[in-house]
Amino acid sequence: MALLSSVASAATAVGAQAALRASRRHGELGLCAPGVVRVARGVKCRAQAEGITAAAPETVSTGVETVRPLWLPGSTPPAYLDGTLAGDFGFDPLGLGSDPRDLRWYVQAELVHARFAMAGVAGILFTDLLRASGRTDIPLWYEAGAYKFEFADTKTLFIVQLLLMGFVETKRWMDFVNPGSQAAEDSFFGLEPAFGGLENGYPGGPIFNPLGFAKDTGKSQPLRWKEIKNGRLAMVAMVGFIVQANVTKTGPIENLMAHLSDPLHTTIIQRIANH
Image (cartoon, rainbow, N blue to C red; front, side, top):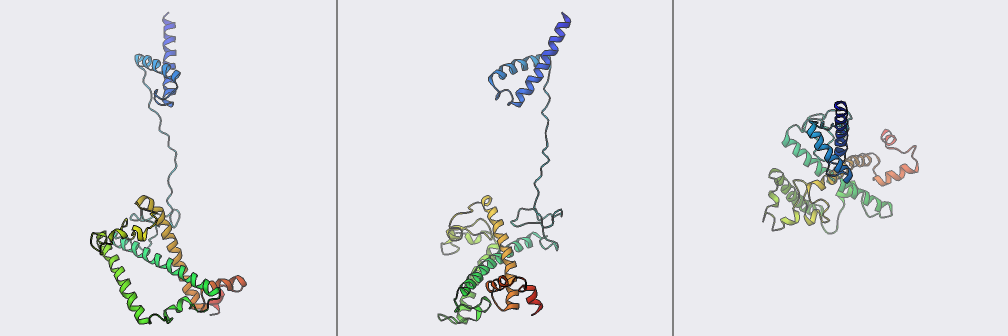
């Protein structure tokens, strides 16, 4: 009888451990099937009476880590470039952004130059397309500054542009020095809500964000990445336009058409070599 009792106790203990493991897999007894719940509860009570404790679940590591995109794969980015900035690929070999205030300024400077470059590239391509379609009254982009307009002379246009751009840039500088100050109440003729944005460099409101694409920081981050990537591409394109204008004395569309007509013999390298 003692032998049978020992065998029964051992079988009960094994069954209790198996039931506990099954119940844990299905949600700590409360989420498993009804039949398993009844068996598991009974076995759990018997297991507690026998002094059997359940082992802690094992932690399984997937070994998957988020890989941050870097300008040079395998390189170690500076500590101050932690990936939170839009367009941050860890590139700062000269350590120009090691000072936090300098880094803030460089971020804003790049953003402004990127936006000007995108506007400039779009304008150059648009006017070049008009010229290619037969409009001969439109000057080349690098000669537009010398073009005489009928509604105003060059000096008047310069003064107007100086005043308008000076006002905008002054407001931008003041907002950089004291973030949010330019959106304060009654700081701009009561029109502050129309320019309300998320932070310095990203104005919003119905004027700068009429479709409401990014009303919070979380949703705006992917759009910031797209903007800075396109802006950097536009800055590189602008450098190419300047080199083309200096060498060929024509616009980018005309240069492209000349290259496509004879791609093997009409390239920027050959034009520079023969310049």
